[in-house]
Length: 560
Image (cartoon, rainbow, N blue to C red; front, side, top):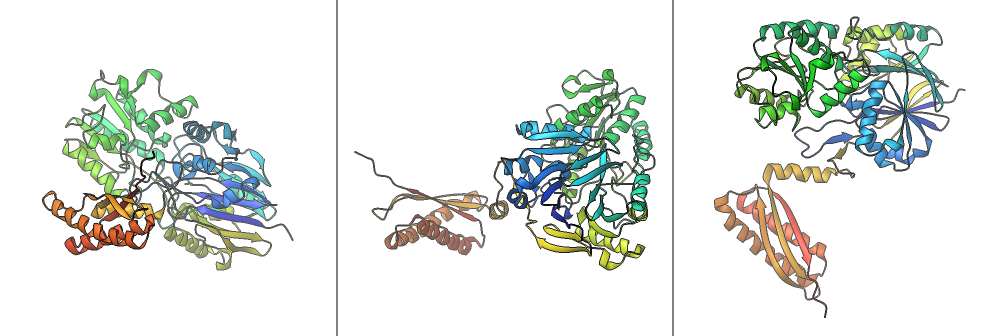
């Protein structure tokens, strides 16, 4: 019997983001992507959500490398967190120049560049990584130079599609290599397919990226007498290229706005992926003297991200741009699920200042980077896998992709739907679930340590009902109150009623704390008494449930 292969999914199966999988054989492992997911309004203060790396931490000495399939944050955004979680780890990264350029920048930002060894791979190249022979194939997506990976393993070829679409007329001419996939399906055959499921429930075929250029050209012509601002993903270099081309046709100067847009455009131009003449592009700092009608600003913030360039414009808080009736703002993207409200607020803010708003709900100014059902069926037809596991998507997308494969003719026992934390075992007998690790969300707020679910819940409660702090100093030796209790509250009661309510809460707290001190000299008992007494009082007095925060200091008598 051939040696089994284990696949562990740490993220990306059941949600959009946090894509991270681990392939293992012969007691060695290779990581496939390591992404993050962005927070929404129910997660205040959270900057990113990453996979639980406990399994990798426990097996750090067995890690041989990490393949980064493309440059989107949901595939590379967790890399620095992984290195921070394993201080002893020096990791080899494999990817294309553009992807690794952004990885390098991430490592430099966190002063981790000495712990990342970057290995550039070319289309069609083969590399031995740990126990696997890996072949890298070009794939079309909404960021340059994505990679399909074919792993040759003791259990046959495992093909990972990465995020993909079948675009026959991509802007850069780099098409998904179906011919090579077809060759692999014949010799030696594809044992297992892991394929993108994001649009598995969307019938038809995705629109070619090159068609967006024609829509942009028409919009630029319609609004030729206005300054044009286009919001787009900073990683979508093909979109930026098309925006630039129509802007140059109108003799507009191109201005980049937003740190990531400036960085990515510079990297893509250095690599020859983005073609804009040096004399036709300027930084926002140098745009003051430009004729607005002869300007095209390509900006970040199309998803309504806090503090992003478009969000600041909408709030009239931008350092560089003041929006008015002579502006047309084009949102060249769809709102990511969960971002609809934030994007709507940005659009409304810009419209209130007089701007003309154009978005994908009105005209086809955006197209997806993920294949729809016809493209998924085409991939299955060419790959002709023996086994299939849908990846990348919400759970309903995974189910939809599994059903699509079975309708095409795959036997149900050859299709397996997994979720975050599942471990699969590929053996001579097929594929099955064989273990479970943590697939939990880990919330990061900019510090090195994650925040807990409890802290997140407290933040939500504070946002909904405010907080009441009970500040007190006690002498544990004398079992006496030295100072307080002082009540400080925010977001709980109106200014006119707060004084009386805080006085009542202080009285209740004093009585309860005195009783606790009489029976115990334990600070935790004092905290508990303060929390319970004030909680009961505010609930009875106002029927509200703010967060109660006891702050107990212990008195230290002065030394002689």
